[in-house]
Image 1 (tube, rainbow, N blue to C red):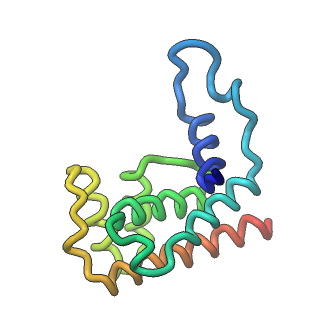
Image 2 (spheres, one colour; image 1 turned 90 degrees about the vertical axis):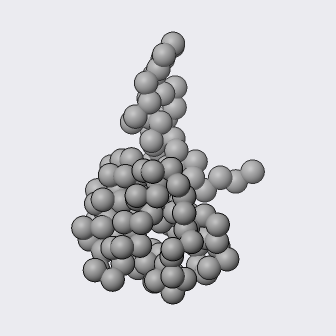
Image 3 (cartoon, rainbow, N blue to C red; image 1 turned 120 degrees about the vertical axis):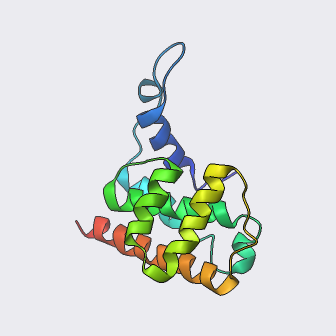
Length: 142
């Protein structure tokens, strides 16, 4: 089964895991080429194009986009809450409340997406995807 997230997950494991027994993940797994990580981020974003693609998973999608945007911009991988906070500082005012709700739902463990207005949610998702695409394009050009 093809898993578009594998390059992202391996990069995260190599950087942030702690071995309880045996060698570290950085010793067990080869590093992921930057081009593979960029392709994985791009492919992950391509999954979310219309309401049906994120229906029932709105909060997870928003937080994933925040993390991908952060990684595409900085080359680092951080937690969902740090990425969402970072993204809110860069989102236009009209989109901040959408990401803020996703962040606070995640932190409270409520997962309540019923407050999202469909058009606002879609606009926020598409804005994040656009920013990610621009960041990934910059990385390819450099």
